[in-house]
Length: 405
Length: 138
Image 1: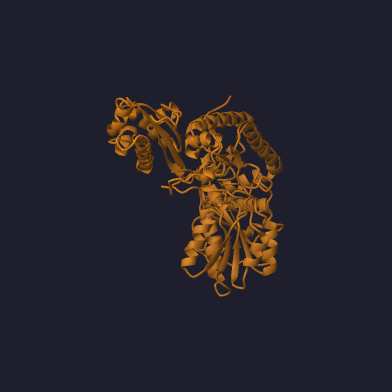
Image 2 (image 1 turned 90 degrees about the horizontal axis):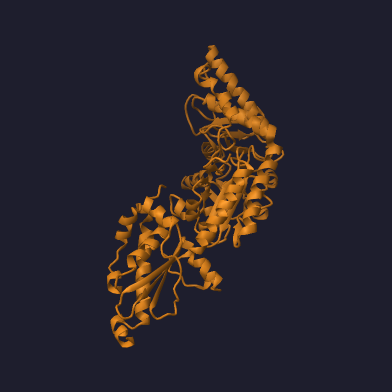
């Protein structure tokens, strides 16, 4: 039985897996101790739960448990990685390299660091959303301390060549941080194979609870040092003070274990649903563009622009399906998506874009309903669109003198 | 964002969608906005040359639901008015009729611009004083 509304916004957040919730529950009311309490069983039980989770998280990414620093989420992890490295390695240099399509948690942190005397290079991306490796290599100077490139993009799902980027960083002796928020738990990520020194990731993007994340910090070859950004009781080996969110962390660990166990099977299922949606839409509508590389892409991501149809009006027509749009009208800033703009496709395609994120709890039936509904609403809105009419009359929209406002 | 029922009604049942023959001397066409800004409105009026009354109005809009609703409402407001009366339509009337929130006020401004552009096109086709033209052709 099809239940509405349908949730297809799994890049924003995911439903907590009931098995994760089950693992968390005793840590609220029965084993509620503070993991830092060393002198009674309440503390010991809480600590045990945390250490088990730390191991589960490490196992998912090929790390050791001691390399996992628990935080409140990927935003905090990104802040800690960038600010912590910039401060710790200030003697060595003040240059950072990142990419124009990064999440704001990285970009705005870089902006802040620039105010404090750092120099930041924002690499552009190619039309398919990928960074140019040669350009990255050429941007590294003797002042560079950190390269930060996200693993999988939250809007267009592009998967960057992290392993190759890591190789370049090793060769040049600079650290590599990656924001793995969208990739970890969804595709194979291994910090050793991929030459990663620091990696942020988050529970709620992988069927865990909100409010808990982690920063992987490499302990050998090289040993990464960080200046803590949160002062206090010295938790997390001094990297991040603050009482541990024990139930959240236990849930994060369980979520990681579930993702690891079903990774390859889920990748197959996600990409099958994603392709089913894509193929149905492409078969029935003209002038539909996929944003970002199809080949190097997260299996659960689809970002499409429906030319001549504005994104928010499309969302309004498919209001029983939860997705998001790169349209300016749906953003707080009234600016269209900077990620789509970075692809160079033109603002009008950003205004017309919809991001679908399939997840563990979606079904083929939901995908079919969504495809049908999207096709119908796009057709209806194109009947309403002066741009579609002009194009059908043979007008070249680029040659029209628009009154920009 | 929650939409007002009136916006939803115009979005779900847009009034007067379509196109009039832009070569017809009785028709004035306004095309405002820009694709890269996320909204483009085409609004057309058809004027009775004898009376100066707007007999028909059509629109097509690329834009958010509020932009579609604003232009749909504008066509309703235009019909039955004279060209001069139509020039008195203000975006604030559209804002209050549709209960548009502050971030959507630009949609109503664009609709007012589209009305003015359509009337100006009609007037330039028919000389500065539309009534004089009407008398001549009558």
